[in-house]
Image (cartoon, rainbow, N blue to C red):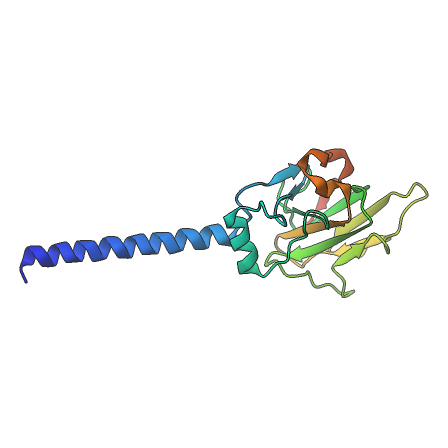
Length: 198
């Protein structure tokens, strides 16, 4: 075998290894983040209305498969997530937040708190979510959920001791699931940042 043939074979092997590494690396990067296409921003909340439909893009399907998620179908409801407050600042457990006072019409909704790793946040009370059936409301039917590390009166979820966190609002049997045209920003609760500590 000549040096020229050996050099060409090494170059082909290098190119194949590089292509394989870039392909696998870019696929892992895309599948580790949010769904890359079809997202709709509604204030602080973001949703992917087509995620549970037949029209979901291949990347979304791959991410759902990798995570083991079961997305809500179009007729079942709508799932919204928030990693920022209404001012666009990343949610941080060193701050306190107020969420309310209304949400889009739905037969039932849940509001869940997740830590920076995407796991349900642990708390001293052993809860990380509220449902519309158990939440305390005022005489007008409006609600407020407080998020902080220290106990608050009323509807309160304890934030993780440190780091970033996220929220997921799931609306079951809602007209908002019919498509992005029905997603009115005034129908979704703002996430208001209050005081921030250390």
